[in-house]
Length: 350
Image 1 (cartoon, rainbow, N blue to C red):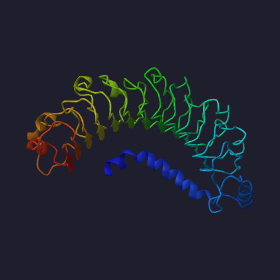
Image 2: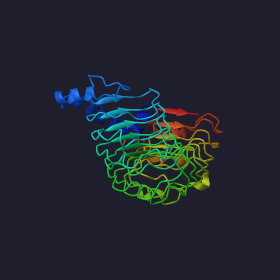
Image 3: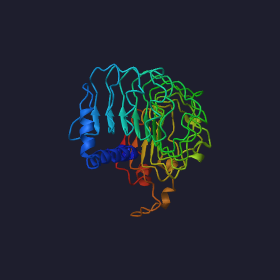
Image 4: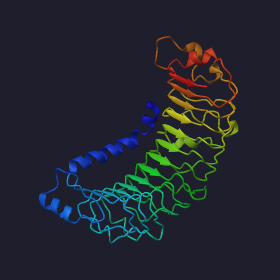
């Protein structure tokens, strides 16, 4: 759907860049390197001649990482029984850009010192669905995407992200992070961070110290019951905010907390709201389903006085095009002033 595509546009752009690198990689490999790469392919893996920089070792029931060929860019090791991230096995893979280690059995002790830091070209690292309790360290400063969802991470070591000026996406959803683990110093140094995913953790308060570059913040399925009045003052680019499945009530939302000129998509489903919060002209998609809202007054929630909205004039008009209100206590019909205010509405779910 359109709004979901916009929400993931930054992630998709990064994936597109990596795909283009994969295609172009076939053109700049010499014949000598091509032969070396194929001959060094581990017997447990598959190295297709048409994509010589890609090594597939996934779904092989491996218990350890085989020695990886020197000209590898993309390494797939997901869905195995790997317990150790071996420095020796990756010693020659100094050009690797992408590693997928999802669905293995890697523990903190299994990440050998120096195994990751030596990978100075690594852009994308996935270690999801493993047994980590903390973020691996040291990490290569070249990383742009770090995905560690669904581990058992309960702490973020001090200064673990120092020097990581290129990291744009940090995914820590489905871990055991509490307020004591996410402090105003936890994400310090991430000057290019765009997307932060802390959904499905144990947070009771909004995470402090987010970089001002943050555009997407996902906090679904925590225990957050309020947002500090000045929280978004230091986040001028916030455009996509998800707080579904929390404990937010009217008292936990300061009156103009969402008065952000940058915000496009706001999701507050499955909370304890009894009123629709105020929101700015810029908002395009609003999810308020499964709260305790009893009525909708278009005059009260309209970002501009209804009488000032001119027919056929888009400038200065509310941009809301999708509104979800099902699962509340609202009974039809919809108030006409709602439609007068939000004339760009394409879908409303009640």
